[in-house]
Image (cartoon, rainbow, N blue to C red):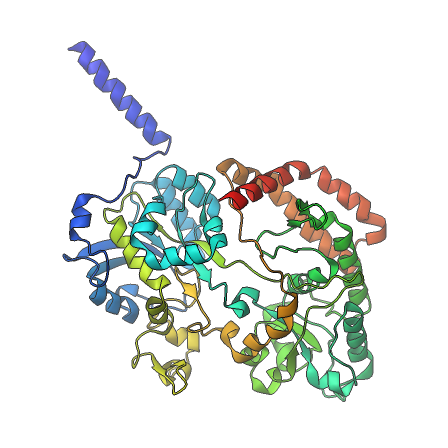
Length: 539
């Protein structure tokens, strides 16, 4: 009898120990009881109605209550699945999501629009709190599976070192180049003509144009000209990087690319090309050709300057869409620029995986297959149209040319709401972070405007061909990257700005800068990056 009590106590101790290690029971697939109720194709998704609890990040641009919003009311009718939405404002999203995960006792069925970082996905996926989705995707997500099959790099970006996919992401259609590129270079074409100059094709010609704007008053005294201005210095660095032979694998994994001579992963902020880029930008800044408060400019000041027509060139999503036709139509798209050593490529391509942790299913979910079918609809054409445009006749109409357009109650709202705010009363995409894929057919933001799409054309000949998607790391690698890795990246950015502004001399401080980086565990940093790259290639 005493022996039996000892066994019971020992088993209880083991169970407590298992819980303290954060591990949960391994997921082996959906239960028979769920499958008996599930329709594997078409609508409704289930015969007997079910309810799921979703934790969701809520943008202020969307309706106050997603439990009664047109999109999900309609979708509930279609699916026979009721969602109980627990909405969390985005400004407290990280804190409250982390509390739910760290507690682990009251998990929702799924995290929706939750913007969960990859490090947390890796951590809680390995602990079993987030379900591995590989088999569920294969069996119940034909739309999403097609995206992964058509675009293997997206699959690579979602696959963690343990081989599992744990999330449905926010995606940009890889074919929607205007969105993949994002902000694009523009030049004031009226001033270009007034100065009698051709469209710049090289960094030298670009500098010549900027000098002419500064010295020759192309506005005729109407405004105080600013040769180049932008909302963030990063945008100019991205535009010019390909002119100096760096960042040749895109923007998904900052500070690293492939050495064109060896094919090895390279830390390009210590290369000669990066140094020459900084010298060129410092020369522009020193001559007053770049807006002098570019390192601290607020968005409202940038917008005010643009609205007044003060910029000779800029980098933006779409000037007409943002600033209106009167000012925005003066700007023409620019090509990639050839640099002093003959380098000419456009490296400003951002990942298709815009947010990896948009939708995740937890171990508390008794209906994982149904949940996967529920979310998969929004990765297919009909679902994407519904997600971004709503219901025909209620939120949008089809024009004679086959294109779709929001109704006047959204684009010319009687309460003075912006298009996004008005759309957010019916739909939930405004504010981003959503689990779906933006495409040229249905996306209504600046990147989908006619001017923004046309701005891709002069860049196309020099686009890098196979940009990386984001790498994924082990939990230990994430820990290291959050310590010395973060210090390295912060130091690179700080010194970049100091070199460009002239607060630090490139000629005098460059060797010290490189040596400092090497002493900040750069070798260990690069070992992590190289390991992640090898896994990325093999996944």
